[in-house]
Image 1 (tube, rainbow, N blue to C red):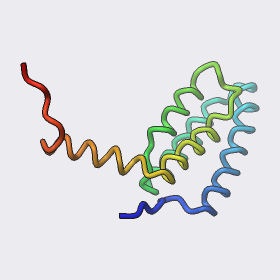
Image 2 (cartoon, rainbow, N blue to C red; image 1 turned 135 degrees about the horizontal axis):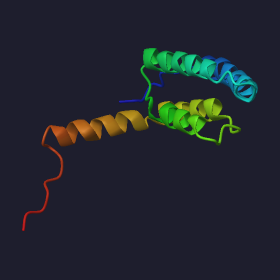
Image 3 (cartoon, rainbow, N blue to C red; image 1 turned 60 degrees about the vertical axis):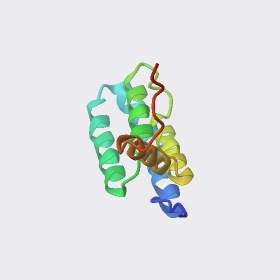
Length: 113
């Protein structure tokens, strides 16, 4: 079965440009003290990824780093790139299949001494 990415190439380009814009805006907003607006932007991006059905783990990791004092890094864009890599590589399906196989009891049996 061939892996079909859930994010199209045009979405990668356009949403990537939006996230670059968000990163530029976030530096200015954080400097002025309006960082709460970043929470709204962050929740909208999470909602978009949830609607697309892609893995949220890379995006959530990037948002944790965005909340740390390393705020000068473009974490929205880094999270988007990581999400696209996971979507294009098919790692999400491999991990889901491994978890389902293990939870079904068909995985490797533990060694009993």
